[in-house]
Amino acid sequence: MASGTGVAVIDFGLGSNEAQANVTGQADILATSKAESWVMADDTTVDHTASDHRYFDALTGLTCGTPTPGIGFTIYATSIHKLSGTYQVRFVWAD
View 1 (tube, one colour):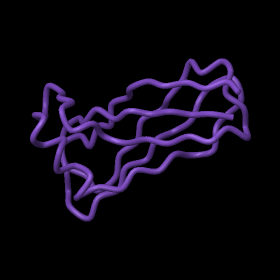
View 2 (tube, one colour):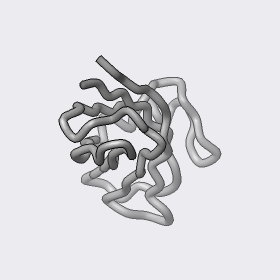
View 3 (cartoon, rainbow, N blue to C red):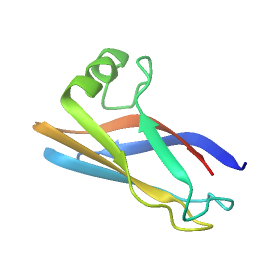
View 4 (spheres, rainbow, N blue to C red):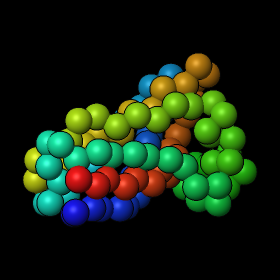
């Protein structure tokens, strides 16, 4: 069972309800692999504090697209509020 973990950055730019991060470099990922993403409470970016990351889950939903074999997948973020700037997200995938 191959698996991968890592971090990605979601960028809402100057203000948007949607953002995405393309995860690449996953040489062992298959089209049938399952991917998941989430935000860790103590992560930070240049735009947002750990406190902002703790509230991110209450404002935003994260979903992962179908993997492209040998490449990776896309993480999609959707919010009912306009968000701005970057947030760090974590991911894991497994066969």
